Length: 476
Image 1 (tube, one colour):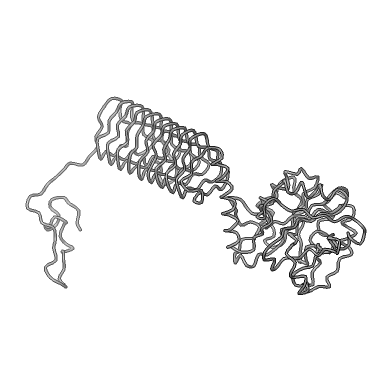
Image 2 (cartoon, rainbow, N blue to C red; image 1 turned 60 degrees about the vertical axis):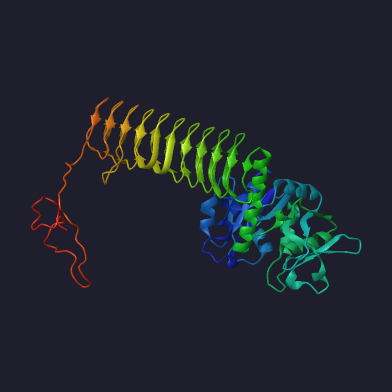
């Protein structure tokens, strides 16, 4: 089998600089969906005819099993397939697909190919409103006679509701000859691939039609509205598969899977969640509303509270993450780790039973077991040129508002007092404190406005109000 995918269209109605076939659907380009369906058939040749967007399309999706041919200028579907002829096998069946019809199923294509074993087969559907589509014209015996495009159809032909989807299977040994006979004597001055149908009829070959199981398989994308419509179709199908596997969804209409989502038993997913890349959720995982997970693995029994973001990170079993937590690439959390609101972790490993419950940044760090990291703590890992690592050993306690200036190590069982700026290693089992001496000034008054238009403070005074800053406080 040969497969030719026509992907040269400009997509003017998308109003986008991105080539139409590269617009994403469920996390991957439209054309990638069609290529995947074609690959499921194990074709001998798989050729992409591209045009608008040029090399951007090829660079985005190139692979060893693909042949690429540029159609320039674009003179119609018949001209596009003719450009692909040098890359095709001259025997068997040639299947023609479209890069902007992404939901076609491999099962449907197999049935279409079977129908074309001794002739030509067309994928058709019957629409209540066939406006804009080519019509299937049948003879008195009900056999396909030809396809007429909307712009060339008579008033009577436009009443036909059976339409051509454009997807067809053609005998490869006849294809080159038929394409050479095509004419552009029509309203659009293009070479229509659909004209091979009348040539097949004239040659006495059977022309069969096949209907897809689902009408949405044949829907194309020509506008952002149509793309959004297909996105909902895909997401609804993915939601139904998840629920069939036992996943509980708060609302099947409010989930977006843009990659591969694997769920164990008793998983619950709340509304507004987005899953990108490859995501694995262990048994009894709960994902709160509006979470975003990308290339992540979440261990069994873990709960992600609302607005948690996890990207290229691993969370162990029985974790408690969020709300408003962010696990960046390289974050690895062992079992029973708690990461609370407004905590960010990057390229760091937290061992079992450790806690960072609020307002902390942990970057390029190795954190041991049963460590408590207080609010406002940060690891100062970047010196402006290089990243440095922080090590916090088992059972350490980091007081609130501490800064750990890497490279630095906090020993096993050590305690850092609140407000400590640690620039040297903290010894195990000891209290380490680094603070400025606390000073109070009796009778000091803050500057106040005495009247509109008057100065509120003298730039020559210190912030304590004395002349010359004699108390050692900084000038205002």
